[in-house]
Amino acid sequence: MSNVLVLVDHTGGKVRKTTAELLTIARRLGEPVAVYIGEGVQDALPTLGQYGATKVIALTNPELTQYLVAPKAEALQQVAAKIEPAAILISSNAEGKEIAARLAVKLESGLITDAVDVQVGDNNSPVTTQSVFAGNYSVQSKITHGTPIITVKPNAATPEAAETSPEVEEFDVAISDAAKTARITDSKPREATGRPELTEAAIIVSGGRGTGGDFGPVEAFADSLGAAVGASRAAVDSGWYPHAYQVGQTGKTVSPQLYVAAGISGAIQHRAGMQTSKTIVAVNKDEEAPIFELVDFGVVGDLHKVLPAATEEVTKRKS
Image 1 (spheres, rainbow, N blue to C red):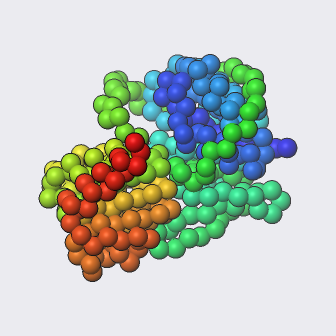
Image 2: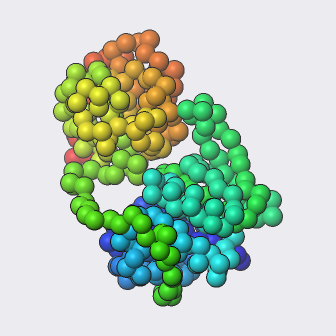
């Protein structure tokens, strides 16, 4: 079987759920080979083996993490030249998409971003599904030139375990001076909230203008479900919630299993960021709100009454 490169998305050895999803997709296309950049590869090994990585290529050159994305793209180019993979899969976050774009130029290959599904097509080549034009259409695409490079949205696949015992191969890469023009001078982790990462969460509860600035019911309901909290642009622009949690065309794009929109009218800007969610529930006092055209389940009512009642019921059933 052909090798499929998967760029490991991790934080200091802690592998993100998106990587398990990519490894699951990679097994459809061939044998997953994980590419790990930075320190902590031994900490990541159990998770990578749990989801079917047949080999782990460790890139430990410190220059790869001292600068922005250009060195990582060069490193992947050198790995691809040796492995000659059938495809390269990368998480569809801001850094991943920039790495993928630079890599596509270097390999003179086609690139597909923000795939919500990847399946095997003719001649075992990957066929992707994308949600386009603000989520109004789904299209299928495939790359016809070079090595397929695909960035995949979180929650595009359900991680499926396939135990392996991958060997770790140290790989030396040479980084050009041109790639070392933007050095990282300082960084700090985002303050922990105890909730899942917004773009990776299986459940999201978002609040909008209808909260009136009181996100207490939204946060309480989210916590009862083990969910992430999001916000509409109107709520963010009003200063009610940090911009980092904005869902929409100018915020973050999410595809959870369950999306609850509370007090959100459903403007196209917001819909573009959450329309690919598997199940959508809306709570809104206005029965003619555009969001109700999109949802699987709708509740016409005041979120300040509906969400506390729902939180109480969820908590009672959990206990």
